[in-house]
Every structure is written in C-alpha cells, then in structure tokens.
Amino acid sequence: MRDKKISKTANNNNNYSSIKKYPPHAAKDLDIEEKKQWLEAKCDENRIHFTRDALTLVIDRANILEDSYQQYITTDGFDFHKEVKIFFVGEVAQDAGGLMREWITELTKVIFNDQTGLFRLFRGELDVSYFFNANAKFQYPDSEYLGLFRFAGAILAKALFDKIPITPKLNKVLFRKLVTPNQRALLDVHLEDLRDYDYQIYKSVAYIVNTPNLDDATLKDFTFSVVNESGEEIELLPGGTELSVTRDNRVMYGDLLAAYYLRDDIRDEMRMFTEGFHEVIPLHVIQVFEEDELELLIGGTPFIDINDWRLNTIYGGEYTEKHQVIQWFWELMEKLNQDQLKKMLIFCTGMPRVPIDGFKSLQGNRNQIRKFQIESTPYDKSRPIANVMKAHTCFNRLEIPTFSSRQELADNLKGILEQESFQFDFE
Image 1 (cartoon, helix red, strand yellow):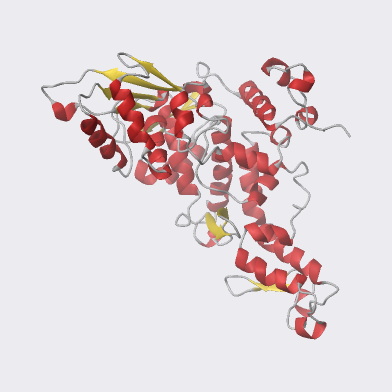
Image 2 (cartoon, one colour; image 1 turned 90 degrees about the horizontal axis):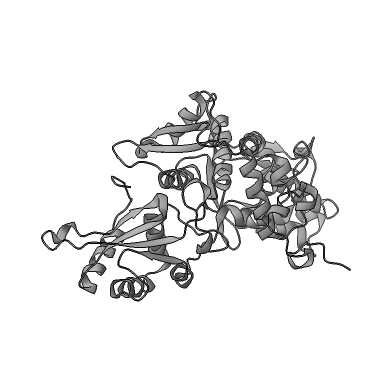
C-alpha cells in the first residue's frame, strides 16, 4: 500500500512555490515540514503589509492582559493580520519586531496562568497542561469573560501567524477542537482523553470502566451524574441522576464523564476561544494539521541545543568564530542549564523557544529568517562599568564588548541571568 504522505523526494523535490499552490485537501497529505511551508504561504496571503496599515499598542507591563484586551476591543479596525508595534510604558525602545515577540511571549504566560483564572493547570499522567477554567465565569464580569477567551484564541493564532513559539503547554483536546473540520458537531472525546487532563479523575473512572470483576451491586451507588466544584449535581444525560452505572453501560459512563469535563462544562469558553483563533487563521487553513502537529508548531522546541545555536550564529565587527572572546562566550554558554539558556534566548531574541526546525529558522522582524548574530563593540577602558552586553531583539543580535578577560565576560553573563525580567531602553 502506498504511503499517504507526500514527500519532497516523491514529488520531484517540490519547492515552496509549488507547495503553496496546493488546495487544503491536498496539503493535508503533506509531511509536517511541507505543511509548515504551506501555512506560512497562506498566512502571507492574508498578511496586511505594514506600509498599508499597522496596529500600535501602548502596554504597561504590570497590566499587560487588561491593557492588551482593552485595545483589542476598542481600537477601530483591529486586525491581527496587520503588523503590531508595541510600546511599553516607561521604555524608549523602538519596536522593529523584537518587542512584539516579547509582548506575545509575556502575554501568553499571563493568559495561560492559574492566577489569571481563564485557564487552569491540570496534571495528566505524564505532564501538566492548561485547559479552560469552568469557574472563570465567577471571576470575571459577564460582559467581559467570554470576550477574554476570544482574545486568548486570537493571541494564540497571532503567535502562530507570526511564527512565535509560546511557552505554556496546552491540553491536546484544545488543539483537536481548533482543527476539527465540522465546528458545529460535538467534539469527539473519550475516557482516554482524561488521561492527559486529570490523571486522578482518569484513574478513578478507569477503575470503574475497566476492572473485570466489578458487578452491578458494587456499581449501584454510581449514577450518570457528576457534582461540580460549586456542589451542583449535573446530569450526564437526561434522567442521569436516576440511572445507575452497570457493567453494560459503564463504558458509556466513562465517555460521558470525559465529554462533561472536556467539552460540555466549558462549551461557551471553547467556542469563543476557537472563534478568536479562526478569525486570524481560518478553519479551512488550520484543519490541514493533525492535533499533535499543531501542538508542535505552536510550542516549538522546548530543548535548546547549544551546538545548533552555535552552528547557526554569524559574527560581525572584529569577531569571528575563532576570536578569543567568542571562544570564552561559547564555553560559558555550554555550562548553562536549560532554564538559563532559555533566559539568555529571551534576552537575545524576545522568544522563549526555538522553531521546530531549530536555530536556522530563527525569526527576525517582519517574519523574515534572521540568524543569531554576535557583534563586537569597543571596550571602554576609562569606564569599565559601561562595558555590558546589549541585545537588539528585533534583529536577534547580541553586542559583546571586546573584553580582555574571561572573568569579566562571565560576570556580565551572570548579571543578565540574575535579572528577573528585561526592559529595553535601547534597540
């Protein structure tokens, strides 16, 4: 049987220009790298060039969600297909792309956060992930909370639209909803989906559903209902409070519980989130991906490969790969752990993760590939304290003074890593 996937070699080395012409039903059979190219082409078709129009947002870092949302709902002609320029209150940096990437990075960390209350962190069997918080309606005004979910979906799509990987890990069911062709149909979920949602709930229900020697007498205390966090008993189907679980219907019971937690209890929140996403990247485009492929595209690569970073670095000014300062720099970088490397990546690029195909595809301003660059700056002997590394995140560029000692470079790097957050008054 012939492999369904269309590969570059099997199709005479299809290039970007031919891939982008594929209709969605054909693009669905491409491999993920080719799908990524196809998606980029579709996004470019919908992109509004910055010379035609752009959005300018003024954001207080301490109030990033509220400021962003209010401008989203009050700005005439707000459209995430436009270029977004960010001005952070109290900072004089000019945004050529780097601040926008940092805004997306920081905003998604606030949106997908237990303390914000829109989404909750759930512990699955192997990992933790964010999913809709059914109690958000009690934390936000009626006039606002569903709009915030729509905004959250639009922000997630904007991150993908502009090729900005995000840090928070989202539940797989969320991605399934985004790529489901028939949005009006009930989302297909089953007991096994609870495994990645809440492992404690999954184990309890799986015991009822899968244990061979349970008899009806043991199951009679369970009915087709569930008590929510407010203490309200919810029927999983009409008359569920009067219907006992039995050996014959327990599989249906498990699937209905999964449907309650992953679909029915957050129906409005999921609908608004999905609508917000599809207003930026339409359903007919995003549905070419499988849920796991979309998860990979949105999350990027969590592991930072220092060798890949070094191989895809270019040098300017006095620096070459063999310069002593550059040798010291990479020796120090190789000693950092993943959290420290992530912090350094944010400092240099405004992004917490690397694209799925590595540093060779690092994004610069206006969605152009721009490799990481290290430039030399003169060392000022008269003002040693002024000799610090500076980043230009819009261009993925790091400026390093021509230090005369490894220790001075190490102290400088340590100072960067000890900062809790980065604010920009240069660029």
